[in-house]
Image 1 (cartoon, one colour):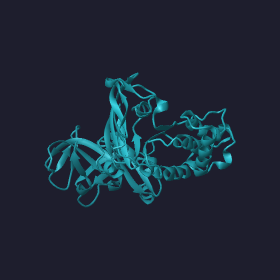
Image 2: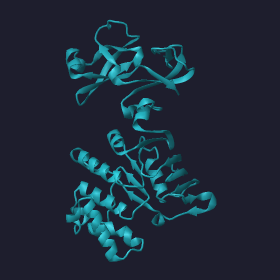
Image 3: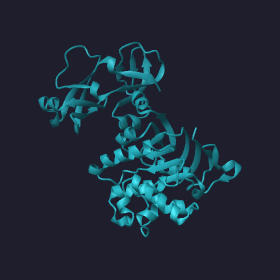
Image 4: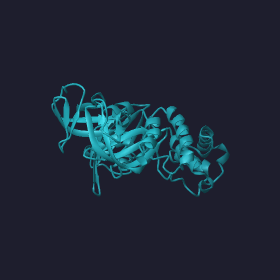
Length: 352
């Protein structure tokens, strides 16, 4: 295990208590709503914020252990950090920025510059070596910051929303470039992101932090199959409900019942998840025998590629994914009342 961390600290109103265990060669995406504690956790791992309790161990070396009086200063940790705004030194050239970490760790000027030049070639910035950061585009600055972080051969790489400053047109290209660099990185990497596409494409594992606590950890597929909070469900575009299992149904707090296909081998509190693609909308009561039918009102439409997501309010709010043809034929863009139907076989139930 490359990184084993238990981080406990308080910063303002945030009470952070999080555990991480990550193997070498793994990229972890750290997700969560605003003020969940993601950046605070990264800064604590970098040694920029002292721990109140817990322990941080990287490749068998203890970096933090307040109980034992251990705190390795940031500059002595084998950790590379890329902040959201990159924090390149404005008075230094790009080459000098990348060489800075090596020089601060004792490398000679010539050795540091040679290594920095090699890294600039790896990230495609060799022609920008003599430029100052203000002359770089956003994408170039991002790559320069990444090269500076990787030049010191860190065992832990921390990236705080590395693509947040990019415009939509550049983000896809930079995401692919970053993915290539991370695939060749042999250490452990934690990436903060709010973008589910970035999380899915960059990371091997997702860790969801809410209110200072880790609420779910797993692969993208595992989180999609069994989301354990409303934030996770919304992030992955799923409808998630919590209720009580009763025979073939999940009874929700307001009394609505979601019927599943088979008797539930569970009792007590459960989650029910319904993918938006499994939700059908009708202007009149549906024909056939769908087990779950209720009334709602179309409040909003979001176009996502070849489909449209309809946000339906009412006794059981839900998101339906429909075709552009369905929007036109049912005049869903006018809003108004609809009937919602979901087949029992599409309701997946698991323990809360």
